[in-house]
Image: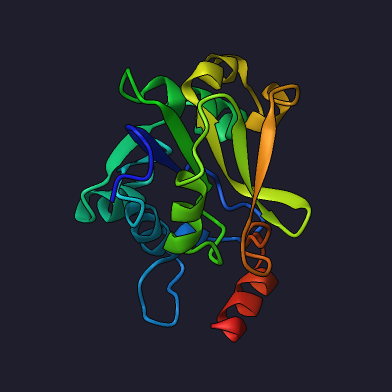
Length: 195
């Protein structure tokens, strides 16, 4: 299945997990596999090449990426915030991609089907966002024509700041899939209680 021409899927996994108190992307789900593995496997369901933004000093995360045949993108300034990581990671993507689906690594409710649903609606003229009802969320599919705007991101500034005036459409996803993320131990417990 090729839902759109030459998309890249970028899993953002370069964060510091400060509020969790330990590496949340390595936390084991009920099946014992780490959250990062689940995110990469969901991304691979799209049929597009998967890239993973990583900090330079996260060997265990890197090993998960290599084990799943995804492509690591080392973000040397990851400690400075999401904006730096997005800018560096998108700058390392291959030339000629039609768009990039950005998936946050700490959103365990997003399924492979959710990601496919967004990819299949690809429109080269507008950004698409997963949504819970009318509330925009993630993932975010950014056509190539808007990627240059991400070069100037810094700090914890997300892509949406640089894209606020771009045409945008919403793709409804089930329940809270587009909005539920894991930042604290309580969030993780809530997720485990759901699964």
